[in-house]
Image 1: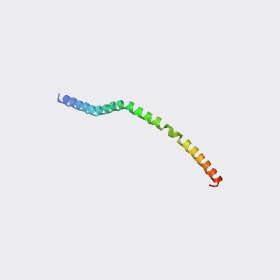
Image 2 (image 1 turned 45 degrees about the vertical axis):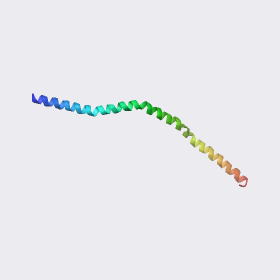
Image 3 (image 1 turned 60 degrees about the vertical axis):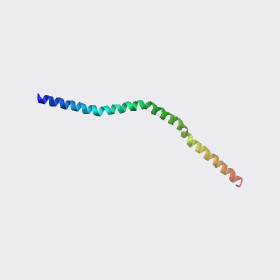
Image 4 (image 1 turned 30 degrees about the vertical axis):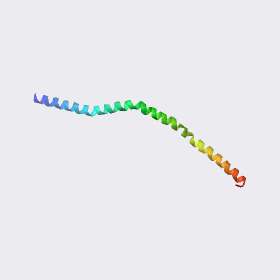
Length: 79
């Protein structure tokens, strides 16, 4: 009978250790799940706010063409 009690005690101890390890993970996952919509909304706002930066290279190319034309015009005028 004593072996039965020892095995039962070890089984309970293992279950308690597993529960002690899993519960914090589940709590953290729940917290992340609650914050996920706000994080997603903030990321969408950031993407929308920075989308015009994709056209920055085009703007720089146009500015370079304009300034090159101005330099040519200044050179032709003797300036």
